Amino acid sequence: AQTVTQSQPEMSVQEAETVTLSCTYDTSESDYYLFWYKQPPSRQMILVIRQEAYKQQNATENRFSVNFQKAAKSFSLKISDSQLGDAAMYFCAYRRATLLRGANSKLTFGKGITLSVRP
Amino acid sequence: DAGVIQSPRHEVTEMGQEVTLRCKPISGHNSLFWYRQTMMRGLELLIYFNNNVPIDDSGMPEDRFSAKMPNASFSTLKIQPSEPRDSAVYFCASRRGNLNEKLFFGSGTQLSVL
Image 1 (cartoon, helix red, strand yellow):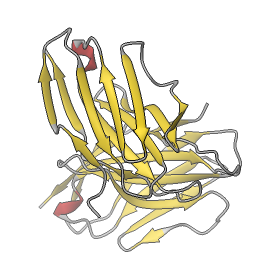
Image 2 (cartoon, rainbow over the protein chains, first blue to last red):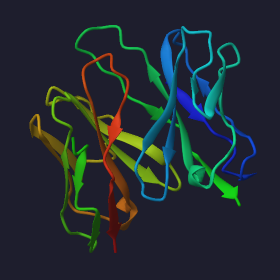
Image 3 (spheres, each protein chain N blue to C red):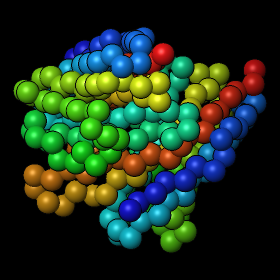
């Protein structure tokens, strides 16, 4: 079974600084997807960024980027120029790549990390 | 598009009562997921449907939990009888097709069982 581990329960960052959130996972699959989701106090789960395991290039979305280390099974999220609106819970998630037509696979989440941003 | 719609947003009930949570997925999405979020266990998948058919219900905690998807635009998660340990936020999410990885979540139902 796949597992996703986020070992840091909380982190804090100064506004405008950079912060890195850690995530490791365990799988025997070679093809899969990794995700970071943001959950602000409104509870809405928002997809921040995703990475396909077959791609060596790290995904980037504006101020958000990942450091994907496939051999180490590590998938960290870097937030640059942190803003007050970045304060939220962040979840790392894993999903097997779907190869068979008609099949689906589930997202497995880590326990999340609470990020606070200091003004 | 209104997104995934869940109701109610909050539910407070007494132990032993039946609780029904409702979800309307995004139109055109053929996969629907029910997740439960607690502080202790994080986000856990309870069950998911593909084309209205339950594919994996291994996460459903016990027989007190049941989920249905009578058509492509509606799903329910029922707990009968409810217990205090069922208190959590329950999320519904939907996705289009097999290879589109983006999962859209509803705003969740905060359930408190007293």
